[in-house]
Image (cartoon, rainbow, N blue to C red; front, side, top):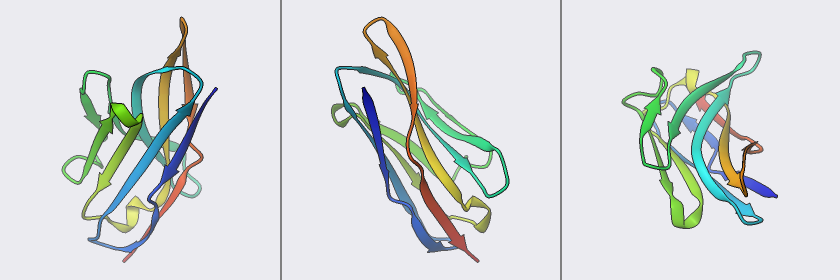
Length: 119
């Protein structure tokens, strides 16, 4: 079984930066795509960014130009560098990883990390 551990959230002021990390560990697996989503209070969970195994990247419009997703395949870790943070970025950030376990493609969510941006 695969587990995800997220870190890097916190309280910052508008204009500051944070870097989120999400590390996968567990039984033998091969990671496929890695992504970040976020959920603000009272709202649905929204897509933020995705990076594929080949390094193709996709961003939500709200993240373009300010956020950078990257991955370290040797460490089974995905990162989200967030610059010029805004109060509207306040949310719980979740990583999502899909992975091959044998011939099965499975998905798993991280536990979430709180990001709070004050004006």
